Length: 322
Image (cartoon, rainbow, N blue to C red; front, side):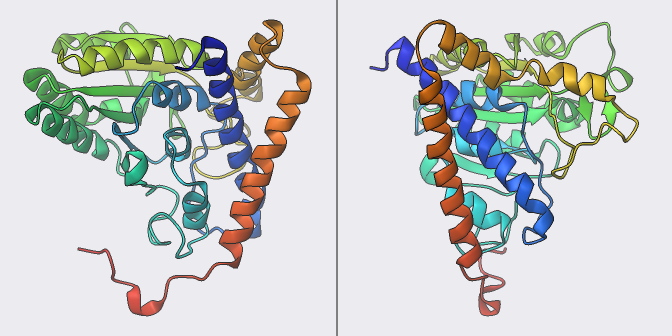
């Protein structure tokens, strides 16, 4: 059994690894060897890590367009992800899906999609199947605050509540849908997690930049779902640092200010977790540097392998299509 100290170290290291992977890929994106549109999770690693650490290997997750962190946190192959971004045959979708279509069934990562809200229904379907089989497995759907404005969100909440299926809905509320702020899209008098309760679905809002708070809330939610009580909803308040799609900074685009971005950077989930572990003597500066070096070696190897690997052959262009 993992001790509390070991768990906290694992949570921090997982976030550090995801951040380094994405920052490395963002720095290489300008080389134009990665031609897929990509949505980075830099700044909002804690929800993915906190939730996925509370799951079992045989639990399944579904994601949307900003899926890198979920994929890595659940145990997806790093080589498979990097290869996919480079469009190579070793990619997890054999170079055919790109950044927004990551999957690794062995790790319980079933699908991600850029169609807003699409995979919510698939997650509910998986959870319904688990329920019908009297299995203790469960499903998780990750999505952003923009997806709650889609009709499928309400259909899925309603169905999940009626059928009492073991699905955890995780809303990563980063306050923007592309370039449009939350307050001009949704009523400010009531928050998302509060509206969900109208479907009799229990819900909770958590600081999405505190990985330990996310993990604790996820544990409670997972226990609720796994014990046959039906769905649960978590709203994780967080923030993306980079542009909606792409590796750049976009505070000069007019929809948010640099001061706002800087304010959220000061709440960095990794720095907060690092400070906590250092103050409690659970790690040292030397260990932090060692963990960064190990993660850097891993991503550098994955990038080198992806670059040197072949593209899919033309004869197999239609493989996997239906």
